[in-house]
Length: 137
Image 1 (spheres, rainbow, N blue to C red):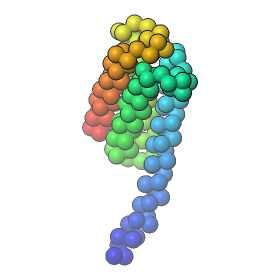
Image 2 (cartoon, helix red, strand yellow; image 1 turned 180 degrees about the horizontal axis):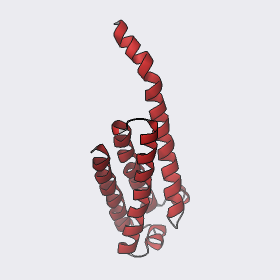
Image 3 (cartoon, rainbow, N blue to C red; image 1 turned 90 degrees about the vertical axis):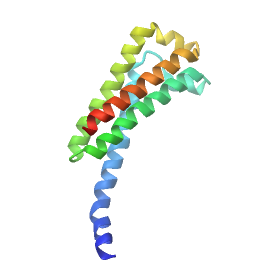
Image 4 (cartoon, rainbow, N blue to C red; image 1 turned 45 degrees about the horizontal axis):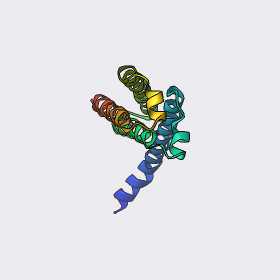
């Protein structure tokens, strides 16, 4: 039993550091995503806008999935921070591409159109899955 406790004692600080760093990256990523989008998703969500909640849920999952894989594959904290930042940037690019293809996502999300919100969420999840697989190597 003693080796298990020693392993826990030595590994727990690293585990907690990586969890905190990853959750901070998620928070930063969501903040950055909110700044990239021309509409304020959180305000729309507070007002009951379903389309905004769908797209924001896609952002949460689309960022957190590759962050989890980055945490798993990282060689250390710096590696996690670098790849975590890349995943956040790629999600912002995914938004810009879908916005270009779907035409005027801002107006459509603000008008609570669910159909384009679902496409946006699917694109975020698809990008998140592809980036996660790439990060995991």
